[in-house]
Amino acid sequence: MAGETEKKKIIFSGVQPSGNLTLGNYLGALKNWSILQDEYNCFYCVVDMHAITVKQEPASLRRRTLETLAVYIASGIDPEKVTLFVQSHVSAHAELAWVLNCSTMFGELSRMTQFKDKSAKNESNINAGLFTYPVLMAADILLYQTDLVPVGADQKQHIEIARDIAERFNNTYSPTFVIPEPYIGKTGMRIMSLTEPDKKMSKSDENANSYILILDDKDTIIKKFKRAVTDSNTVVRYENGGGIANLLNIYCSCTGKTIEEAEKEFEGKGYGDFKLAVGEVCADSLEPVRQKFDELIKDTAYLESILKSGAEKASRQAYKTLDKVYRKVGFYKLPR
Image (cartoon, rainbow, N blue to C red; front, side):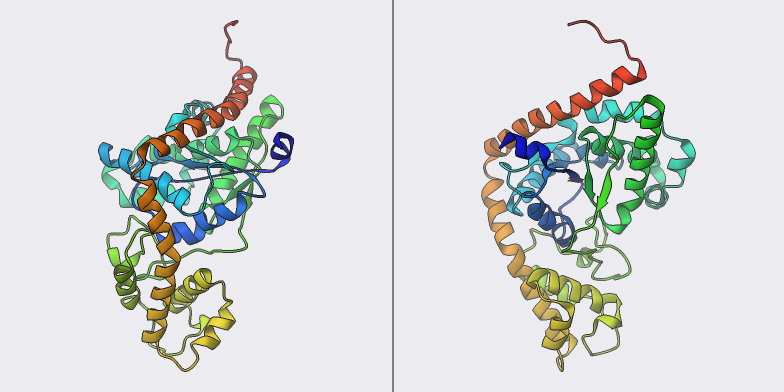
């Protein structure tokens, strides 16, 4: 069995514990992660080091770190099949990031779209970590000799720079890193804001009606969908775009139906009936996750045991890579 695991391609992904996770996180990431765990050797991380590029309240960050792990498991991710861990528990992430910083050009980082966006939102805290965030992300990926990284369209630029950094290092020092490829899932898609359908659904949005939280109760979910922005048409057609296309994506992700099947189902029905139906299927899809989360979050000892074993397993893989990197750049190693 160990040999089989080693032959599997490696996947790495992670989510920040910087707020409660949304329907977008569930449909766009977590649901797919649980599908991938049987076919790939998966490293799924709670990326708490990335979270502090924006000021965090320490006690809340600690609490949300454990909650994020509980949501991972409640979403169907099996700790027996994957490596679940917290980024800051494996110090090799920060250590490799420093080495890679010295192989990354200032101009490359200054062109990153997310840096420009986040700087505009956090004008009082445009820190160096926000600028070098993509290098830490590259370290996250490259440490595990990752073959595939599940990404949405908004993260493709980060995979591209990780590939550039890896190729530059390999060319300078000899082959060291696997060059990662983006993995675009067959199911799930980019889920947009309910109030501004041209923007991605985000847990950091100031308008609570713009997102559905994985842990929202059924009444809250249905109320938010009833308030969802649509358009002046009354026909449920994907080609209408905007809010209607977003709601159809959500409906189909929750039910497994095709867009064509959903359009036919709501033929002759108004937006009110459609939004209610989307709210119902969304709440029903999230209910088992909420129930499992409520069980898990009460068992701190169990969650900490998962994090301890995950950190040990991740560290073994990470330090194999880091030792190789340190040797190649010329760091002097003390004899044992």
